[in-house]
Image (cartoon, rainbow, N blue to C red):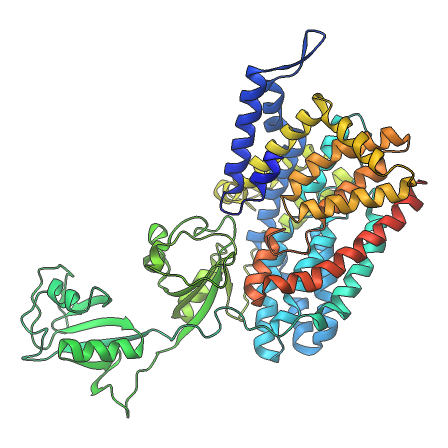
Length: 595
């Protein structure tokens, strides 16, 4: 219960909760080992085994292999097809997007899939004038459905397969449950295509028009004005430290260092950036004359307004692994590194709260959206770097000569596991080596693709599962559940248990729900004297149904941000979709497994 409490605390990082639970388990069982007939059944070393577990190795290797597909632009052809469809037939394009996202998510982590499709949808929305909110959430939820269909679709699937194998069950093949997923998931995709857009209200993306543009301009120091004869520090103090000066020009060829002690003279040009209202305020405050950046003959007035000189606004979504994740703009040296000015911030986890204080000092989290301004070239350069998700409606994905190579290696990884040539953990490691050897992936990109929270939650989840089984708690909970459902047929018990997993995964991490539920599921099947396979799949499907809350899965946060959704919007679509999927699996699993 304490573990579940920690996993539901939004103010505690997931990796911190995982470490705390791991410490409690190892320290507790070190001081009080669980023994039976004088033999230590569960000790602290059992919990460290998760760091070398085959499921964790496979998950980490697949995350890095998937990163190679992202960085090489291997999915560019798909992006081109989807983009053309959106420009001509939006209704059909939505179906193509849903199906494509679901199929891709069966073979790689769905986060890069969502990152790939989001700018395409945003760009199509800007060109075709349809509401982003009607399609962004269905796209994100479709990738979660697709991820259910294979052993490598999500880390949750690999975790369930690994735990069930460790408990003596046969090892599931890659496509063993693709049939029930295709049947039930197909109905879910039809719901997302035909019904979900009608349930979603039109929402304005959070950063649409919250902040005025920033303009580059010149302030010419006038004789007898406040700035005449004053030091730079005095001028900045007069503006309460808010004036942003890029450079100081004295003559055509002389630029002064921006030292606090520099004394300004008449004719000096201060190259500044700010909103039109603030620039006019500084003009009056300093007794200077305001000019456009490229026009020093006509002072700025009603007849000669400020010109933005090709400046563009763009939204940068903070994703896990980006240079801004869990860092401040100041620490990342964002402005100097990318030539872009941050204007405003939308907090994904507290969309209604106002951001106060210095924007550059706020620690950014996954799902946050940063509104920036800069030249078309600067925004294109940021997008081409592949390090951040840029939403400006002009999608140009990276595409290199290594793209086909990366696709070929990924195909080998999948084929080797699918045909039983080698376990997925081995084929993924081999694939990672090939990606690096062929130049499709650098060690730096490989390192950034690993997520510490994912690693820690998997290790902790494995430790919790070990504690549940070793101490007999899984059997106790299974007996309690069966007794509570006494008199019900096995299919209804299966359905009730799947619903319990579904509720749990929308409250805590899906990996935690899977690790806790898998041992209990096998114990329930043993108590009932039936095959454990459908109960294990009930855990897998239930733990993946993170549809009803924006915090149930990381891609939900991304689409919540880009689509401007509110919490209630996820309930409107997520609850009906969850019911459809739950009822569908409750009906088909007993049929396929003769319950």
